[in-house]
Length: 104
Image (cartoon, rainbow, N blue to C red):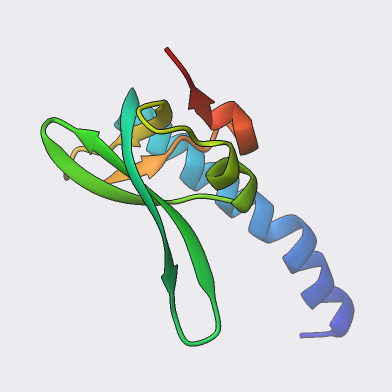
């Protein structure tokens, strides 16, 4: 593969694949406003992940978010999430930053 082909794939191919995955998630999942019950930062070898703990159907789930979302989250606020058929909870890909957070 040439350098041009690789650059083309990174800037055009990957966003198309990500867009398809996000639309599939929204189609097959249930959109919810989950209550934020905690927050912490998960640390890996080279990365840190701001994480909000949300409660859905009596269970707590860790959701990785951006720093902007993490800093804007208030205790007992709500986070826009998608619950998949297999029970996983992920942030709603239709929103970014502070748009993911709603308050009472």
